[in-house]
Length: 358
Picture (spheres, rainbow, N blue to C red):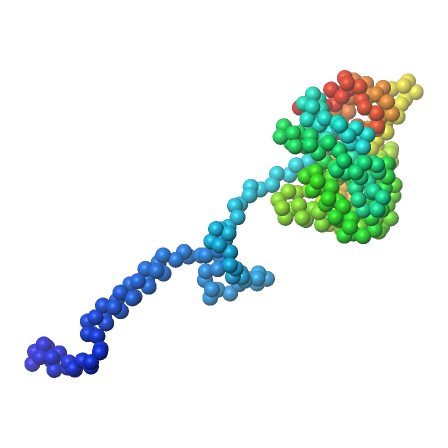
């Protein structure tokens, strides 16, 4: 018996309404082929939602379905890594409270400097509002309009809180949440990446921890946005270095989570019996403070975290020779930056000091 005869005997009559078997086979093949082609067209991942059978990583919430459009679901562009920006060279101090029309771009161009410090911001009447030197509202100044042009030219400026004219915000603002908001308001209004805290009087433990908590919150927020916030403290220095209270303040602030980039030393210029500036006393004060700052910041060495700011009672306090000595001392020891406070130096001295920024 032939095979053909066997198949013929095995056939059964087709029931009415049933399609021919050959047509069913063709339809099944088409379905399998079409499904496979559709699967091949799907991407391997769809915004991280593909592979539903995989368990989410520990501590990571599984993605949630949304009704966003396909365009809105596209991943955000990856930003370049942030560049840490902090003062360097010679950093002039500008007081918008006394000189609200100071032209930052022109000063940067004429004096060949890149960085300025704007201050001081202190507590207003309600204790939690920053104002210039206790008098002028923070936003009542044309200084911010010059900041954009300064930055466009490659310069920048930071903010200084505290000082002698008024109370530092952490002293007057007793609520850490309101204090954080006050600092955040100032930082955001000027778009700064550097802030300084000038502490002239010893703070109580509550003030130190309140300020540290607010700064830590701001630094974490800034890091999350890719714009690190550089923080320094400006403290008076004597021949014995820093006071024990200031050393404890720095240590407690660091232990509370604040990243302290530098300690700016305020060194008054004394005069010798011959009438000259006693720069030797300034050098002694800085050398005395160096190991104290290192211990407070938890480092073995700290020269690069020290800035120096001589305080002048008049332009005559510094001669051209004094300016050369100060810039040489700053360069030789690798200090973070050099500045002046009090009276403005003479034009010749200022030109020699700004040579650090060139």
